[in-house]
Length: 254
Length: 310
Image 1 (cartoon, rainbow over the protein chains, first blue to last red):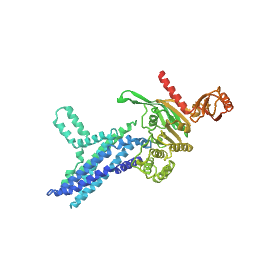
Image 2: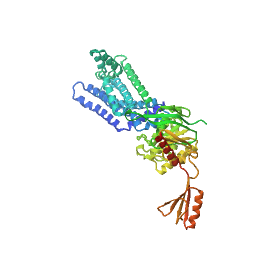
Image 3: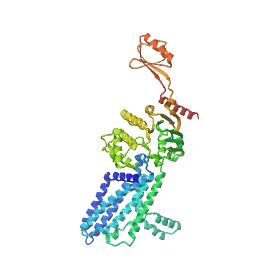
Image 4: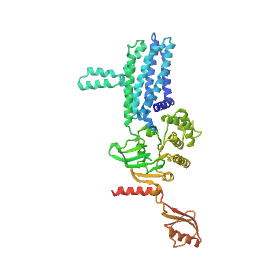
């Protein structure tokens, strides 16, 4: 356990000493601040604009963080050969991957914490209780955890460019997973139907973690939805991290 | 006493360009390293030294054969708890300071905060980096990085230290310091296994050496056993006229002296009598023994000849 914590803290330290993280965070906070002024241009839905833009900023800039930090996590250690000395220590390979993922989670958590606090403050300044946004913010974090897991998975066997393409593609496809279900119903041919059914089952359903519309419009989530969505996201992320561990376990360092 | 490192029948081949063909990097290596010795794995570039080291650390899987460190496979963390490793041309996290870097590695060994602090101070002092504790690694020179790598390799007081080309890139002072560190490890009863192509260092340090070429073991043993210790020839430096008829090959030196190479004591006796008689002066007499370099070149030459013959 101490090895995982050590690797996680080192990964977190690397990220927070990189200027790009501050740039991303600054843009997110700037967008949340600007949403206050944008809302002044509308009539009657100022608060909705602030909430909508704020939640989107948390999600978008969180995705950027997950991609920028996540895709080079493992690759950089191999490329710079720091992994040689690291794996010569009493560290199991799965501990290395879990430590890297835990470090990325710390980065994503901090990012969501800072931007989320900014949004809550912006909404509170408008005179409304901001706590109704908490489930949407937390599920946004769970979504980033899932995307981060894919970034680590791709990073464990390919270079950062391909890993970034794979991670962003997963994000896009994950938000369109409903279309596989629709295609299965409309498209002829049993082979294609089976493919659509398979893709729908395998591709993460990121829409389950997207409750921004409910939060913006103040609609309560169905009973049990939040817990089920959190469990879905975390279990899916855990499965992806296990897959990354299995791939990394077999990897050779030539 | 049981062996620290046992390697038997080790083989590893890599795919060629575009995955076509296979090139053997290690082709049937057998080695045993005993506790408390300094063991040098010697060979030219591309001999399979680093590949062997990577398999010893579990970074590569052997195609065949077996490696045991302290009787356990290399991927076993209990074996790795007892070893320290310095890679060739190390690169470390440049966003960390020297202390943060060593602290990170101390944590990986599960050391407590107070213990880490104590060991870091000791390791930094041992490698001569005192005063550089807070310097970011991106500002470290190659020699300083190498020293820090050594500090990382020894700070947890391992039983076995594996060093891949530890002298490469170091100036003479740095090489001397690394040599002293290696000798200090042996004095403390530790085992040191290092790969090198710098034979002078190996000759000064090693209790035993193994010479590998194209993945095969060419020679292994104590230096005294491998290298003939009787003088092979004698070099005599002479100033002044040299009489005709005395034995030996003569090589004039730029400073006006002559280096005479004689092949044995009878010829030397004749030369030493003849030079003063002719008005010359004998400046030095130097019996030349076979060096590790001679052995190395001989074994490599033999290996190449065998390859051509086959």
